[in-house]
Length: 257
Image 1 (tube, rainbow, N blue to C red):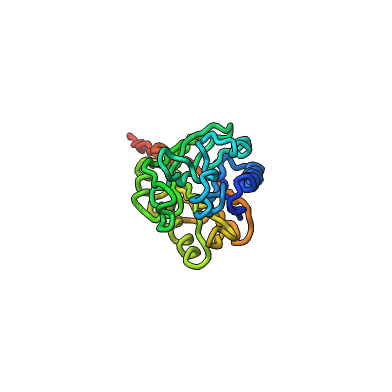
Image 2 (image 1 turned 90 degrees about the vertical axis):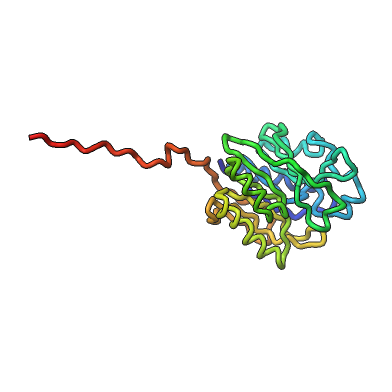
């Protein structure tokens, strides 16, 4: 399966504009042969915490919110991140996964809220798991991925690919992005797909370089630090026991005189 990591320069607090940008990137990913495209943290609105706290109209009502209809009709599976209404007073910071036919596959809510996100969002509790094309996936959102237990559980559960919708800025974010994600791939034997912002993102400047790493930590694809774009790479199912076991050797015949 070919997977795309997208990086976006969002229009602040403008779901319509950001959906349009995302649809264009999804179409580009599909043209490159991708079956799944992963978007950064809070792509629907940009990383605009003050606006999200002040205006519940910027939250998705549910997984069927019609504002995502254009993206759900893009003909490619998507993992898309947005503020999502919950039963309580605060929204979840959630990744919603849709299949290529637009059907809702799963929703994951960020479990580890970074300092300034607390009080704006409600922390999630459920693990993000889904299977697409026979490949099991896990989900994490930005700061989640700094907690080895989260990705370790994913590997223990048999996941093959970890998808990370994130925001890493210039400065310390450059170092964190370049160490945390290949580290997950190396430590847990997962493919890791990072989708990051590029350019202005709330109070930060996204450092871009959305990327895909192979199990073991080798870099498969990486975007630049300037351009809204997608990068793609192939991921493979886990090898079966039969394919990894050494071939049996027939016993040598003994000549009889």
